[in-house]
Image (cartoon, rainbow, N blue to C red; front, side):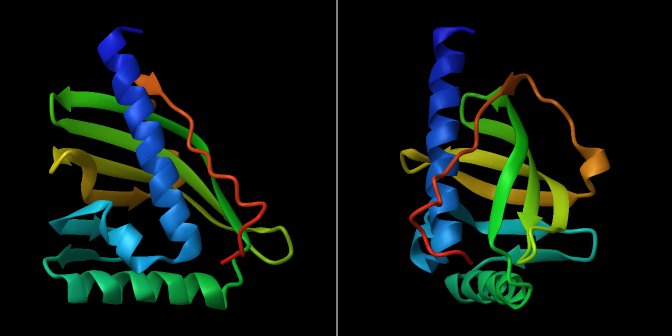
Length: 154
């Protein structure tokens, strides 16, 4: 792996550590720092354009409400990889698994994140979530990890 690729790998791993910390803590302000507005969120059910902080907060409040009602205790990445598209654009694929209160799999899916380097940091501007069967291995694998042992579950 080249020096530049290694630097991007470390930056993406740090980005996803920050992202997971914010997600686990349901910290809306920290989550917002991971996104560039406007951005889009795509699921098999809908596509949402998020063009304001108000819409961002409502969308993530809805996500956190669903996870809380489902009593999701943990979530983790099964695998993760990225490809650098240009100097300031990266495509990331992460396969997620969300675990419920009886240690059952609540859901699993593959998420494709489009990241742009903006204002000195990587930010998400598009997320496409698909069935796990749609997962792809991009050029470089990386680790998505966040120690949740001392944190309150969702």
